[in-house]
Length: 81
Image 1: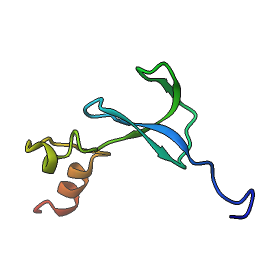
Image 2: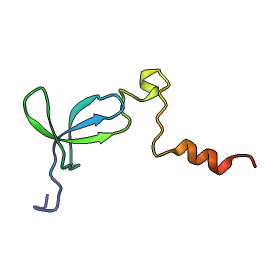
Image 3: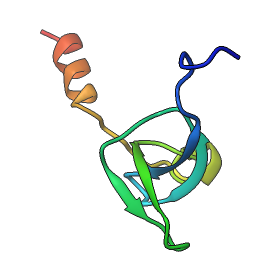
Image 4: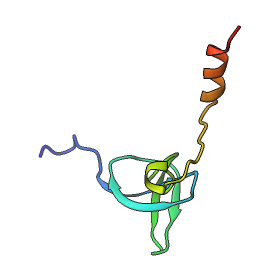
């Protein structure tokens, strides 16, 4: 590999904002926010809206997630006049 052209590959925490589920994995993503996990180490945290802990396919539950008013936008655009 050439030196200096690849992003840093390190451990980060992905946090599901809808279920507060957190897991540590390795990634090249960066963040200014950090979190201290149970092992006492501090990791950068990447916040996601949906993960396997909150996705209806994996949980078997229908959780309604409305991000940025998508439903209202759809209803406004296609409402009957």
